[in-house]
Length: 253
Image (cartoon, one colour):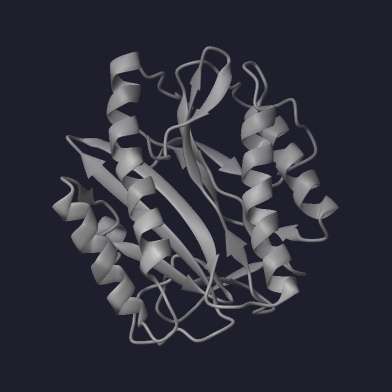
């Protein structure tokens, strides 16, 4: 596995795309409400990206039909926008990718729709807290498998579980690059595989289930759920290793 190391000007280019991702997610969070359809939300995100000089990189990627992944309630990732109307108590995952001048950014949030239950608040908090915990503990020369184990232990300490078979990933001049970064340790040896180095840029994205880690895909061939179809949550940032620490690129200036 050859994990590319990015030059400072390349990281700056990825940062530009990632900032627009963050702005788009914040715009959608502020403008999403009960009574809207998932397609309306997708259109808002698509237009916002284009109006601000970006290209919605998910649109057409591997055949995905839309600019925004809208993952509602039990759908944890890769939800396809349709005519479903949001109602009070729903939770909605929004995942956005942007390309500017050949460089990519990617991030995701899970947000409440109106007032939600305490259980769903905890579910969302687990994904968000896991992401920031992972960013905080990353160190150069740590193996990605060590990071995966730390993520898994943090998730389970909160009483939840990591979704299996899906992962974070490298990013740069392609939307998905090496490495693949699982949210759990695969196998038993955390001292295997590549090490984290300065200059690497990758997306961390905890995907949280309530009881079962095993995943399944719906008939649309995109929407991913836990096999028990309980609600799940998802958070993601694009980060770069700079001066021996993880720096979040997908945040507004």
